Image (cartoon, rainbow, N blue to C red; front, side, top):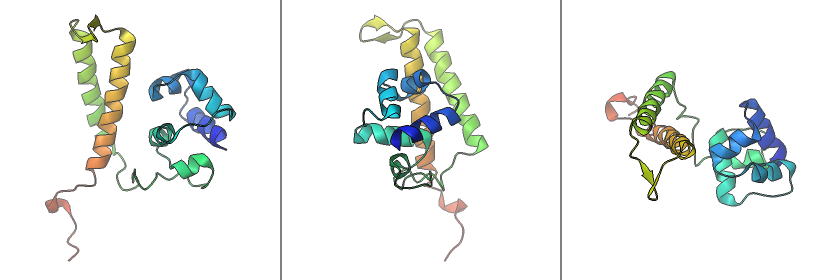
Length: 148
């Protein structure tokens, strides 16, 4: 069930195994093994896949037919708006400019490759998205409904 669900979600996003594996930070072969059912991910990897696709681990494992986000992600009330998406795109573009404009960036004492820059950019986009979702929980008092 897990493999079929991962493959279904990947195809819905229009990603190849190579693209998804790169975004998740592991090899295509590892992803192919998950999709074929010949290998099972550890807990952290399962959580990473669930978070990436914004589904629950129960859905991935076949314990639920509803792909709702897990309680720990709680993205139902924290969905990103069109404005959030635009803000994220602007931030990512600024980071991309910074990485492209400065040839002095080093990684472990060596000049940074284009692949390394792309990996950093993907990681930063993921981090910005997660931080935006998490911060949506903390609405300032002036924006809360008067429920008392």
